[in-house]
Amino acid sequence: MSDLRIAAIRLLCPDPGRTASFYRAAFGCEAAEEGATVALRLGEERVELARTEAPRRADPAPGHSTAFQHFAI
Image (cartoon, rainbow, N blue to C red; front, top):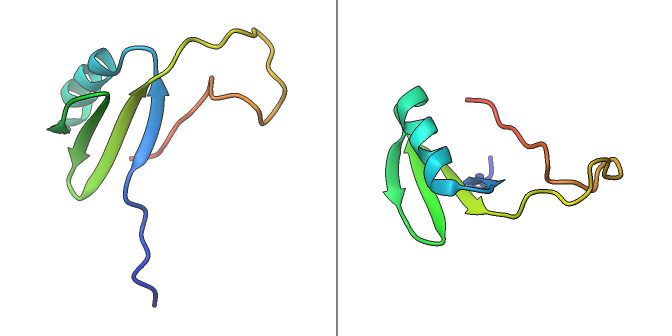
């Protein structure tokens, strides 16, 4: 078995602070660090929230957009 693991999930969002507040209230995440990227912990898992601009195209080409992202808890 390998010792490789996923260090963190990074989500792009227009307002990392507001998104972090939602994850703390909804799932009980704890702040791991603040800065250009907001990091949260949920148990052993780490979620990073990074600022991005809103998508400019209403209909991006399939597979070439960060407009929809998700992860499972």
